[in-house]
Figure (cartoon, rainbow, N blue to C red):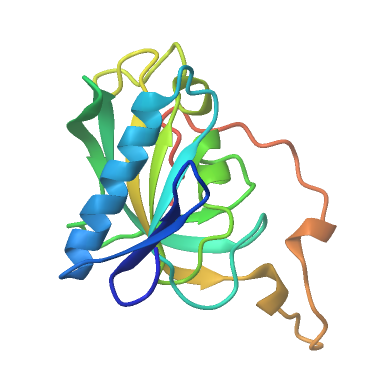
Length: 189
């Protein structure tokens, strides 16, 4: 994904190709289909697949950084998008999370690394990186592959935090108990 509605890619002969789209939406829709095609062509999905839809600006996020996110999650069914099982897009409240805290599914922790403020990414998460064999009662069947469209609306980098004396404070320096993910995988705040 490139700014101004471009995508570039290499073919199997290592030739570089560029595609220009008529709109940002058309570029995003194409990128989503590329990600789904990657998933469907994988013999075994054993890690998170992701495709950037918008790159965003600033520094990429890493463990310990706090984010506020708008997202929609679908079940991956019949080689494509199934029903929406969760979303906060039309709600007033963004999801707040601290990367690396263990409060969200492992696939989000992995798939969101390196995203930037204003960035949008498509994630396809295998069951082992999501809710596994237990699923989520009434929402996510056991052993479900999940698809998320996530957008980082706000970022607070650990390196930007400072104490009252002006010294840099890093949450990575303080020992914390081993977190146990919530049953629904999303943070309560």
